[in-house]
Image (cartoon, rainbow, N blue to C red; front, side):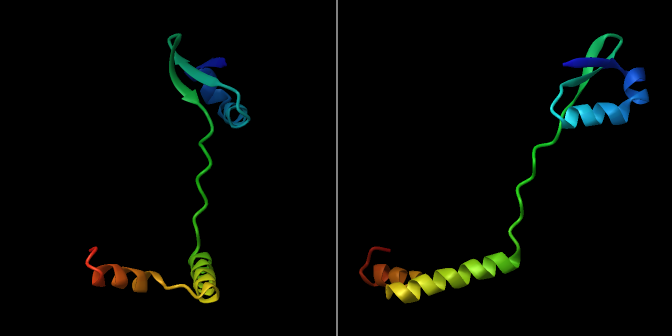
Amino acid sequence: MADFSVAEAKARLSELIERAEKGEGVVITRHGKPVVELRPLAAAPRRITQAELDRLAEQRKAIVRKSGGPNAVDLIRGVREDGWL
């Protein structure tokens, strides 16, 4: 892990950001005491698009149709009719 004073960090900020992005520990000090650590942000999870959700819903419906089994509504209705809910 490399330490840099605030003055050094101001002069070399782009370089320090690149080093941190590559995984190198970068600490900025003030009066010799560590105050900031530069490190890359964790990758954000990819958001699922509406088109992908729609496609998954269609795939689920196709599986239920092929299986010939009851859908969730029918299952819940049956449980209620049998007095379980």
